[in-house]
Length: 119
Image (cartoon, rainbow, N blue to C red; front, side):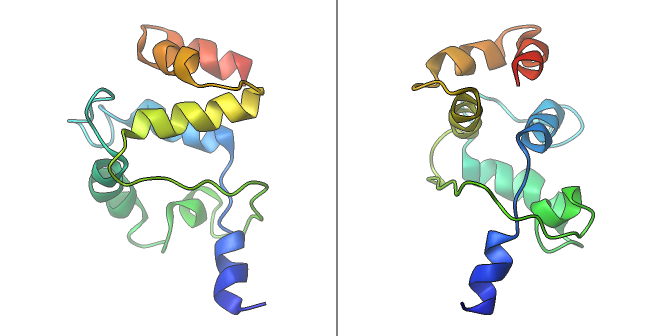
């Protein structure tokens, strides 16, 4: 197996790490984040890259530079809304077939806390 494939496979991140990151958007990180508008590209440029500049990847930052084998591979489109990407990941983690109900929960007051309890 090519070394780059092994490296990428070991950039796993937990659902809790993703939720913790999402909770920072719009406040501590990327203050202008808007779940109705901000794309994955926006979040990567304004949050992920600045946060992980010294680490090589956000996965290595949250893991404390310890490789973590991913249990699932997630693909994405840079132009889609970032909130939709995370809602789909959270839906998968909860065994839901669709993500619309979780997306709605994520934007409601107290919704992130309710989602965190479910996860």
